[in-house]
Image (cartoon, rainbow, N blue to C red; front, top):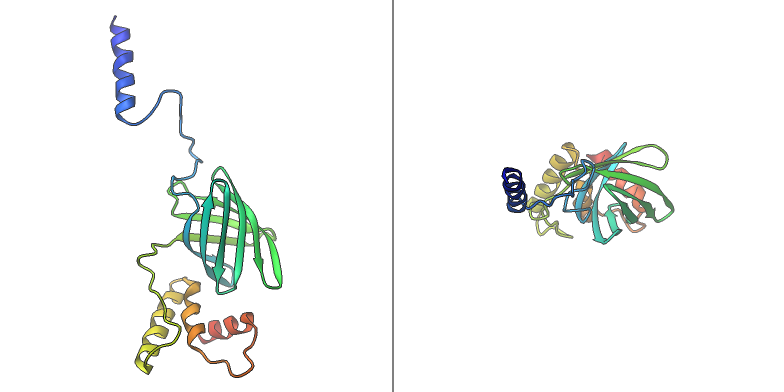
Length: 182
């Protein structure tokens, strides 16, 4: 009888804790948040702001300022897929941290690509054009501070404010010029 009472107490404790007998959570299982959201990502010389949407095991998204797209599939805590940009494409594999807040991964050439989930409510929305020289100075100063802190997507508002002349160069050239300015 005491064993039966002990088993009943154990089952009640598991039920109260939200667990179930026979279901262990693996250490490498992804967080409940999955891959959906906005990420600040970095690689060797640059980075991007990446927005991902998840539908089951399928993940799609985009990243700026490179005008890139993501097409991938979830495999446990990994995201395996393709990055696609005008003029180039390649593979990648990311591994989501257990807390769901960061990932680390590699391009198919072996170069690192890492990211951190952004709190979208804390990310300022940048205007296409500023209303005054003071606003331009504020936007550029905020972007410089974010860029200094490793938030490479901070080039976006400055790209939107700069006039590259009548013959606007390709996006890669504009990004390079802004990064040199920073």
